[in-house]
Length: 266
Ligand SMILES: Nc1ncnc2c1ncn2[C@@H]1O[C@H](COP(=O)(O)OP(=O)(O)OP(=O)(O)O)[C@@H](O)[C@H]1O
Ligand SMILES: O=C(O)C1=C[C@@H](O)[C@@H](O)[C@H](O)C1
Ligand SMILES: [Mg+2]
Image 1 (tube, rainbow, N blue to C red):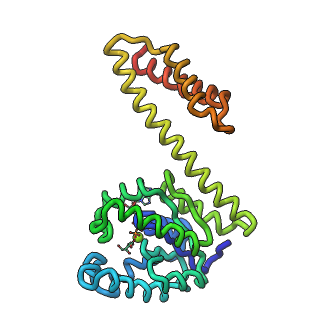
Image 2 (cartoon, protein in one colour):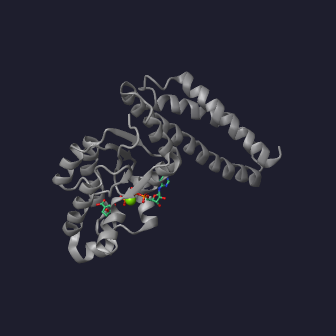
Image 3 (cartoon, protein in one colour):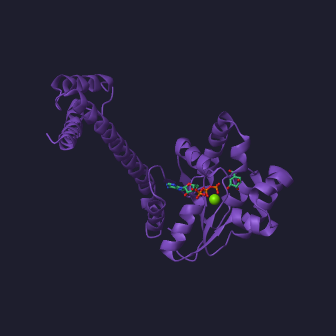
């Protein structure tokens, strides 16, 4: 799909990981890396926050378009700024770009969490949660439109996302639609196991409670009731069958019982 020395351009919402993943691709693939935000700061001799303060968002966007134009044939990986799809002019550049454009797709929850931890994006300081959500909704179709490929990032580490993108270099065109779907499946699998590990943390607290009050590990009634309720709640799903619920709950409950017994030396 993409062979060196072509340009690989990462787009996506602020905090999606464009800078982090871009550097990681460059590291793993031994290619060069440029970040549009850093280039803007270098050219202006000021931080992005200062540019926003002195010239407003419009002033920042003018600088952004200039740098975007300059990196179209950069030999390596380009991380764009989250707002690169804001100007119609930029969308035109991206639509006709010789670069391969990858959309790093995430979810609002994890993205906002990361941005709050970092706290450096001017737009994050000035927007309400509702405005931020509206911005997300507004930008998402624009990223989709100009991207050649969308990578689902939720639950994946930057190194994993970088490896997934590098693997595209050797994929053929016919495979891309399938790989894009698999990118989503892989993200769901990671979320499933993250939730399972969170479930185990609660199991640990339950074991402490049972120990304190001398309650047996196995509560047959509760286990049967739980399965019955799950089967009823998912009765309209053709894919989540009763057998599947039984199979998965058997694994989860047995693992929970084993953990409780280990913890309580029973
Ligand atoms: N896949 C990931 N998993 C966990 N943390 C991540 C991931 N990707 C990025 N981060 C963290 O999220 C923060 C924001 O990442 P980064 O600066 O790369 O985002 P960005 O897309 O370049 O944002 P911007 O559009 O504002 O430039 C960083 O602290 C980074 O370490
Ligand atoms: O999403 C945005 O509009 C922005 C994202 C950052 O990368 C910076 O380009 C700047 O903070 C604006
Ligand atoms: Mg960045």
